[in-house]
Amino acid sequence: MAGCQSKSQSNTNGNSTADASAAPTTTEETTKIDVSNIKVADAKTILERKQVPILCYHQVRNWKATDGKVGKDYIVEIQNFKDQMKMLADSGYHTILPDQLYAYLNTGAKLPTKPIMLTFDDTDLDQFTIVNPTLKKLGFKAVYFIMTVSIGRKGKFVDYMSSDQIKKLADEGNIIGSHTYDHKNFKKYAGKDWEEQLDKPTKRLEEITGKKIDVFAYPFGLWNAEGIPELKKRGFRMAFQLSTKRDEKDPLFTIRRIIASGYWSPKTLSNSIKNSF
Image (cartoon, rainbow, N blue to C red; front, side, top):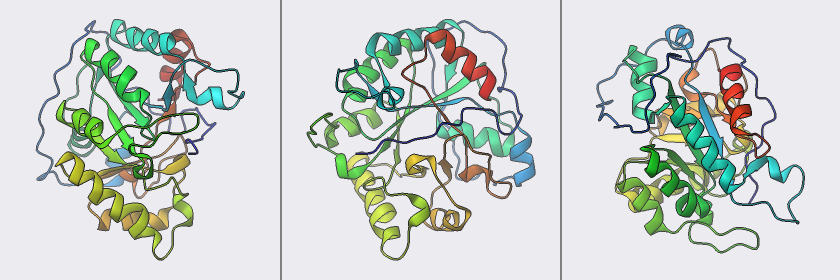
């Protein structure tokens, strides 16, 4: 399965990180937010709010001799990942989830000090066996964008999460989002693609979790304005891309993330967060 790809890590909108004040903490309680009555703000208001750093991870495992130079960019070794998460906790970051971000962007609702969102793409098993226990120890929550073709599969190079494991993540307060059926480029959708890549995966994830699926991550981080109405039509509230400039008309559907590179030390990650948002 192809992973997401984006080499642009720069701040393309010029807004600094939301609330940069330090507040050392290693625990976090996710506030329940009713987003059903929130009125969507105009694009100018949303774009003027300071961006929240959002990190995108894929595989978390130790490198193998067969891993290529490009592949290692998307594979964070286990101890490095744990050190990165400890750095975030020691630096006073608090993880937030999509409802909190939605309320903040639309209404200016208060966020915790030094908010950050952690996202994990493609359903890799190590996100359940390694990532989840690491985050729980720190009181962190995350968003897992699931590619439904991979659920329960054993791959040649990587295994994938089962339905029960995905449900457990959701039951523990993490958010499950859609990442299409099989990672097909969103910019090429036509005809039956909308049903195969959006409708069916959404239905399956809702059956697994028992919860509404209303956040989406574009495969490869690639999006086009023509497809956004299709997401809205299906009840998605936000969609996440990778580092290109946010759309001036639909910023909620072009929210920026940066890939946390496997080559980055915790210090490099810290600097990248500050420089990119």
